[in-house]
Figure 1 (cartoon, one colour):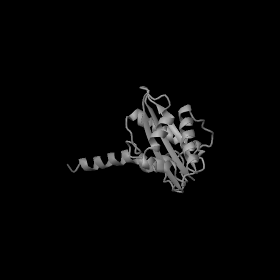
Figure 2 (cartoon, rainbow, N blue to C red; figure 1 turned 90 degrees about the vertical axis):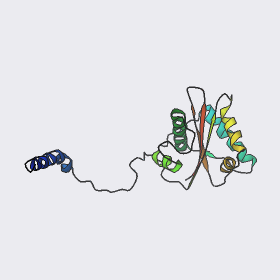
Figure 3 (tube, rainbow, N blue to C red; figure 1 turned 135 degrees about the vertical axis):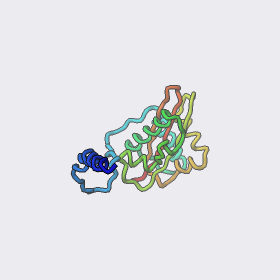
Figure 4 (cartoon, rainbow, N blue to C red; figure 1 turned 120 degrees about the horizontal axis):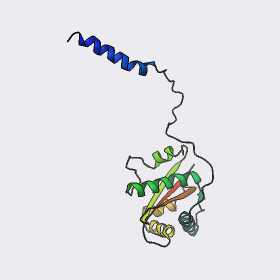
Length: 176
């Protein structure tokens, strides 16, 4: 038994040597490594997204509020969430991995903001799913409050149409 101990020790050193030989890295930033820089390239809304955006701004104007500005970065993030809900078959503000809105914003490269908010919707078989989503949100006290909040300055809708024709909408609000 005593003869096997030195051999086991040599094997451990032999196997661990490459890992120990790697140079040490100095941490120079506390910025998350998963964050991707937000791009400023324009994102054109789909017809469904455009309709929901227009209907939301009409509701704001009717209530004496200024219309939202379109935010391309927020649209990208919202589209990713809508697609995720469809592909992974869930309907929630929290992903199966436990990512909440703020986590998803950071992962999308949206690192600086004052306030974020979100509404989600699901529909199937409606001719105008964008308008239908807005209509349903306006009938809900909590969803309506976000849409008519003076805290938010910009918004975007991200939509995804599943293979079965179901439409997922993610409406995300932001003030930077």
